Image (tube, rainbow, N blue to C red):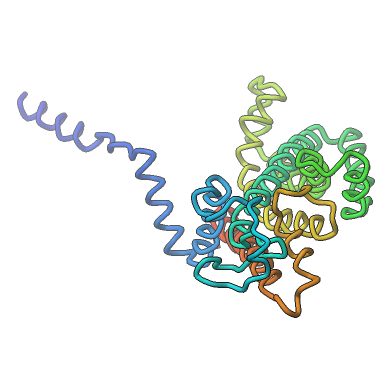
Length: 304
């Protein structure tokens, strides 16, 4: 009798559940694995993190406010007092570059958020219902994509003004069209799988199937697409500011700083070099981080 009890105890211990790993530990392990296998993506993530910190706390890193000027110190080259020099009004270029990061972050991530939400809704609904509904939506997307992007943004901004909300919504609508095609393509593959038919046969409604079964399988592609688009949006915002259709003064923007330093480029090249370097480094960081996320989250690349 005792032997039987001992045997049951051994079996019980053999089937004991392992302790669950807490969320912070899993996140730490995932971060270490990402840093080990994606060193270039880690460097890009560090650039994005620095950009976010500068945008959130510009006053903690900028030695002066972006509106503070001193005409007696105008057009001074880089020095200990002014790391990036001063512009035509005697404003500290480094401080304006730091505050300009806030413009890039707000517009970049705002556009990606608007485009991501619209693209997800349009792509999932179009792929799930299909038939004439999908055909109608795709023809609308074709018309949507036919508009020349930059000219359309300039047209809208010239009518409604160049506020942050106008730029974010306009660019968000443009990026949503192309992103919805990506979401739709992946959603079509997921919607044709057997577990979707099983869920439908068990009585699951359309909304539940889309939100609980299709969306989680499409989410990695949405994240990858959004991470790559941030750099493109920042580059477009800088282009608009360079052309005079960006955020209005006095708030600094890297594109406008390039435009303002163009006239004195030969005598004072630092006026354009530093904001141009900020744009280049930021776009590079976003792109390599997005590529690393694609390698990690894409099922095909992860399996390979």
